[in-house]
Length: 139
Ligand code: CMP
Image 1 (cartoon, protein in one colour):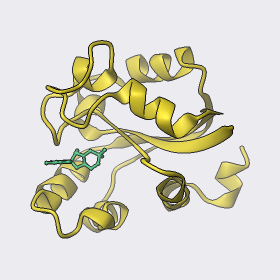
Image 2: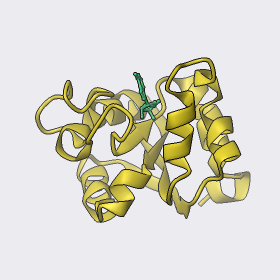
Image 3: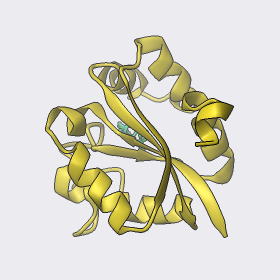
Image 4: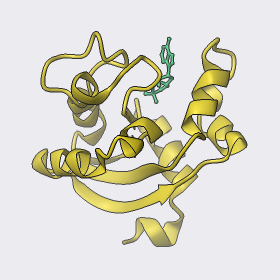
C-alpha cells in the first residue's frame, strides 16, 4: 500500500554536511519527496514534536539537541513508506544498526542518530501535520 511518512535529517547530520547524501539515498530507495523544508525548531517546538517521550529520562537532552540547529523535514511517499524508511535508517542506536543503514554510517550516539522516521500510521499523521499544512502537503 502506498503510504506517507515523515523523515527528519537531524541537526547533527545537517551540521556535518550530509543533507545531500541522505536525500540521494532517499531517492535511490524510490521514495517520492512530496514536501521538504529546513526548520530550526525552538525548544518548545521540539518538545511538542516529541511529546510522547515527555516522561523519558532522555527528553530534556533530546529536545535540547533537536533545537540546537536546523533540521530538514521531508514528507516521503512510497509503498510501505513507514517500514521501509525505518529499515533504511537502521536501529535507533547507531552501534546496533545494520551495515548499510544511514544511522550506522552517519549516527554518532543513540541521541545524535542522524535521522528520524515515524513509527506507525497514527504517528505519521501527527508528525506530517506538525510540519506541513494542507497547501504544502498538496505539492
Ligand atoms: P527518534 O527516532 O527521533 O525518536 C526518539 C529519539 O530519542 C531517538 O530517535 C533518539 O534520537 C533519542 N533517544 C535518546 N536516547 C534514547 C534512548 N535511550 N532510547 C530511544 N531513543 C533515544
